[in-house]
Length: 86
Image (cartoon, rainbow, N blue to C red; front, side):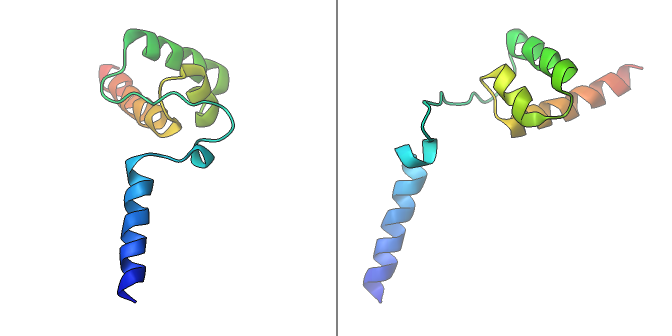
């Protein structure tokens, strides 16, 4: 049984260190950015929000450099900021 735990810990390291091609999918995906949003990303975010509303996958596709989770989080912070200003 100890061999199984070694095997599973090794496979866990492989999964977390670098995604396999199967996990990425058929099309090549560029890495998502982290940190502050650039003016260009924010502008594309606003365009996508206007066109697609809260369809975060479509917002993600329009922005290109951020995940749908990042877009959702950015929207939440953006709406809070708008509410404070009014």
